[in-house]
Length: 127
Image (cartoon, rainbow, N blue to C red; front, side, top):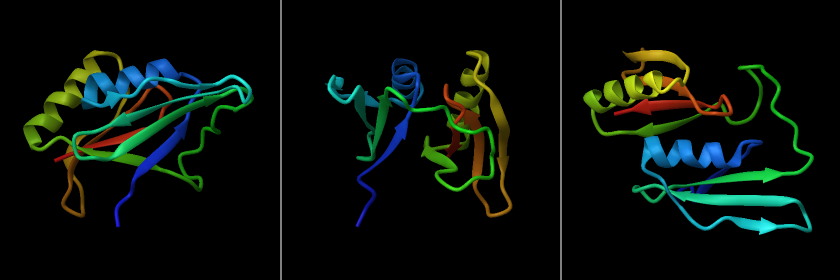
């Protein structure tokens, strides 16, 4: 078995799409629009085969700002090497994104940084 995709609601559909395409080399399908339901979405495809569905719907509220709530906590995206973790983290920081955790080796042996996407979702950039 494998995870087929992860879906995330957003109020910034185009910004989120651009973020993942620009920094994580995602490829997007054409936008799906259901005017009756006030729903729009993109499926972003990553080289590994994993997909991320970005969804926007009228009437969806922004998330509560509580880092310790139930639900998805973070996405981890592998970029292949320590050098790539360091480089991408610096590029994101230079482009104005919040680096919540500088590159480091964690207690369980991961080399990672943590950056926030346009909606404030935590993205672990790993080897």
